[in-house]
Length: 352
Ligand code: NAD
View (tube, rainbow, N blue to C red):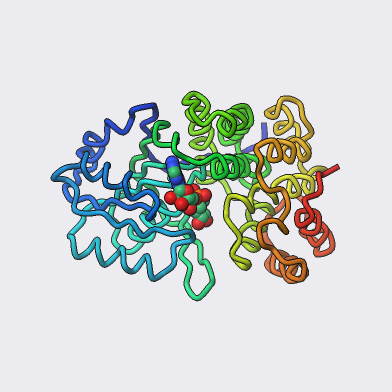
């Protein structure tokens, strides 16, 4: 056994179909009496339902959350929280809504109660991101980690298949990179392997059988493990590429993860043999890179960057951006190899 450091940010998780019924107890536990409920415009009715459940403990609803937390949205929500004298944020939704809660917590230290409805995993991390003038700045801060997380699979039943599949692949990506992270450790690796196993097994049923509660419940369990991986250890080439490519060319977050992941795994194949063996076992014996590509394809997800809006003429620049600042990866970051990785991902090639 290699020496390691294990550090897990403290958080509380309530999991299960119907867990939302525990909302009142959880708010009481936080000592909050004036909660600001957050959502996207599309999930406004879920936010209003949560506000109704909170009754007198709800101070209001802000339903303007959008992807990548534009600073203008963050400022508007911060102002409303202040005007309403809110003492807590309840974020109902995916990474975009939870990200908005984090932007509020960053400047106000209001506690967050997260009710995730996708598989992105943000609720388990102290990582925040805010976009200003087209640039997304990210950071880690203990103040933004949700104090309490209610995972209720019933709320995931409405997630459309074309969002659910890539969202699940996004979660798998957190697990994959945790296995070869610079600060990987045995506990996080256990969570990562179990996360990949659970997600790979249930995602086909999540997509093909929208009414299958057990499949969505398993996916949410995998998403929890994946989020914990992302919150516990650093990431590598895959997350760096998704951040650079997705952020610079305004590509959809979960789809970008889905497309890049098999190629990032292929890139690291020889440099991280133990992690590859774990990924393969978790995929039921499949090759790590092509197995992940096959899984994405079987979910009906996009497998080519060109099909989600990336232009061929941007690939040189993207490779430059991704190789500009040195960062940890098990295999050294080389321009020519990254350029080839991006070409393969752009064309949607199955890794060989
Ligand atoms: P999202 O939150 O943008 O949601 C995508 C769409 O699905 C939205 O329109 C939303 O309203 C809708 N939706 C969500 N749940 C639904 C449900 N159950 N039923 C019906 N519709 C539903 O997507 P996401 O992929 O969860 O989040 C992406 C964002 O999260 C990105 O900005 C990404 O950078 C961030 N993120 C941050 C972290 C972190 O640790 N900080 C981790 C992962 C993702």
